[in-house]
Length: 418
Image (cartoon, rainbow, N blue to C red):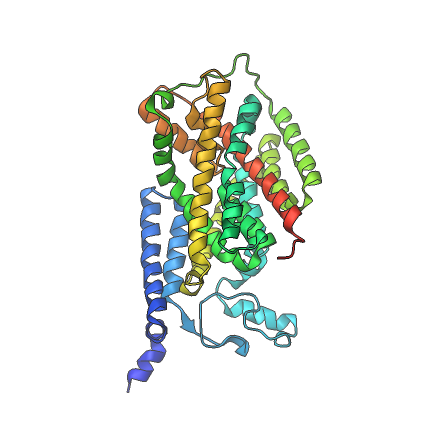
């Protein structure tokens, strides 16, 4: 006969919800609802569907399916479907590879996390795919404008550091949080793993949640800072603009990859991944380009979103450090957006009014989201104004600039204690 205890054993998700504190129970329910919201907004196109749909489903599922389990007697009590490679283990608990492989079999998605996520490999795969879609010809057409806008749009990456230290974070933690202002998800994953691995999960989750919100927030920032008269400025192609061949682009990408890796070896994995994708695009090796820009990119993006959702359990979100992280992540992206538009104004005055200030928002390197946002806002005010080529130049330059800044942060702070 089935009694109450039997039902509690069968329906462990409900049991665990009733046995935790009311605050944690409410957090779990809130995150389940948030997961549904992310799926809905991804489906409607308000947020980036490729990330938000798997992330939302993962977030809702992991907070519904918190369960009791005890693999190898290493982890008892309430835990999620997904744990660290050796979570809860004593120094002598895992003695050989067989024990580790047993953990990998038991814990759902554990192999994906251990072998691709926690070491930054999945970030490199995503960067390869992004590189295979980038045309650096947009930078070469307007190198000065692109680089200036990208530098201005890194305001959040620098301004957030002193604010984060004021909140009590160490300089390494502050730098890992501040790189959210670069608006480059893979770079955020990579930098947080290097500088603040203990905050890697919340920083990654916060970063991707906010990157999804740039679609909705930046148009309002643009309208607040740039009057309609300036938003309507069309941007003509530079006079006597040279058309660069695929070979020339490939040479430039190769030289930049080697040079940047030489200067910033700590960021070489992501630098190489990005430029490898660009070189493959320009090399004409269609089989590679189809694989990197297709199955590799979309498969990695799917697992990235799924892992971020699974990592977003209530215990993580209830950490006291998370609320400041939410605020600082928002501030970093806000400052970067403001910096980008200030860069747009700078180029507007330098060019004698030929540069539309809105293009500055594209210096925030959320490729190609911010470039699309810039063009969309401008098109509403002037359907004949085309700023997309300049916006893509700033966008791609922003990716490279963020990689450089992340490399500088990691190089300067990797051995810093405190």
